[in-house]
Image (cartoon, rainbow, N blue to C red; front, side):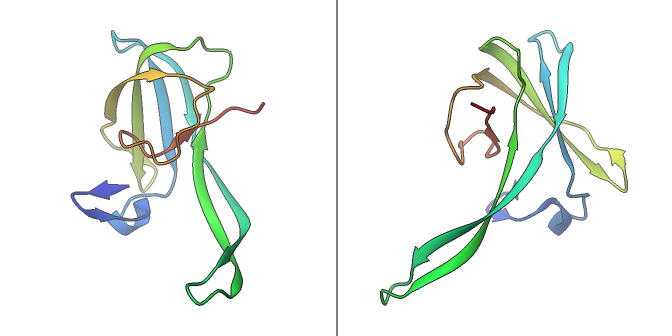
Length: 114
C-alpha cells in the first residue's frame, strides 16, 4: 500500500496486514467480499555481475469467481486492531481473466485459478 510516494506493507502504516476486497455494484451494493491471499514463492534471478541467486517474491491476489466481467466498484478495506477502516473505492472494469501485475490503479492482482 502507498501513501504519496512511500510504499510498504499495511503494518508500516500501523494497520493490520489483512486486506479485504469487496466487489460492489455501481450503486454501492456489496456483491461479494474476499480476503486478499498472500502468496510467497521462490524465484531465480541473476545479479548485475552475472551470479545466479534465489530470492523470495510475495504477491497479494484476490478473485471473485462466478462473477461476470463488467463495470463494478472495488472497495479495499483495511483494518486497525481488527476494526474495519473506511474503504478506498475504485471504479473498475473487473475481469477475472485479466493478468496485469502492479496495475496502476489498485496494485493487487485479480487472478482466478485456471
